[in-house]
Image 1 (cartoon, one colour):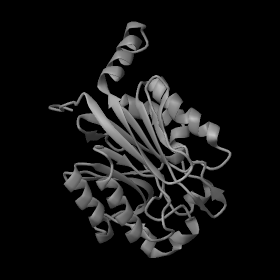
Image 2 (cartoon, rainbow, N blue to C red; image 1 turned 60 degrees about the vertical axis):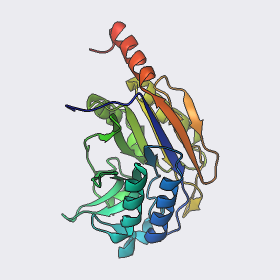
Image 3 (tube, rainbow, N blue to C red; image 1 turned 90 degrees about the vertical axis):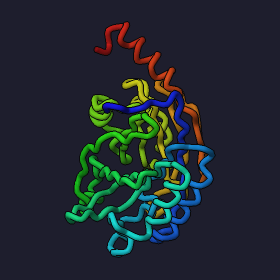
Image 4 (tube, rainbow, N blue to C red; image 1 turned 60 degrees about the horizontal axis):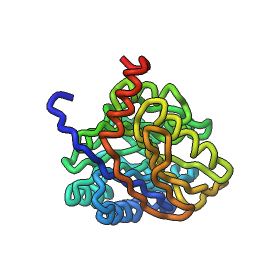
Length: 260
């Protein structure tokens, strides 16, 4: 991006959030409160369907869907502007063109909105949503942030493409359940290590129809180490990302002949 000004460090936060089932307005208010309390973070990532909860049966209710002019999002937009935080919420998104996406919705301090839909949908999800695509990386203080939704992070080709587009941070809104703890350890670590990106995962907390969260939201270094971890309950964790670490590891790969 021409004229992009990079900051040496980026403070990020991931919210392990347990939504009030079906209550978009209340979940938006809680998201706004988390933005205000995010300890200087410039990016705050929420889990999959953080505005409604992961209960596909509830999506028969029109009020569980969110659109671009939805006034229930105003409280998050206002918090984002007031605190200089890009907030990424999870929503059942109904676009102005009628597209239905299982989406990560980024609300930036300058009032721009970016929507990225999940590409790798489950069988049940395909009855409600259509596959999304790749959006441009978000610019957060000069860092390029690519959004991924849940199982997208399990598909290596998804990370290959966002890395090709220059991502510095891979931000995954997810639901990992009990018994999937190893997957949650491996997926972000592998994407971070293979592509020299920082990886973030915000996992839902609590439980829903047929599932219980394993917790474990966190942040992974581009050398594959986990540098922040949540437990099993609702919590916001923060981490400070260093541009120097990213540049050093990428330069090492160039020297070794793995990058052009």
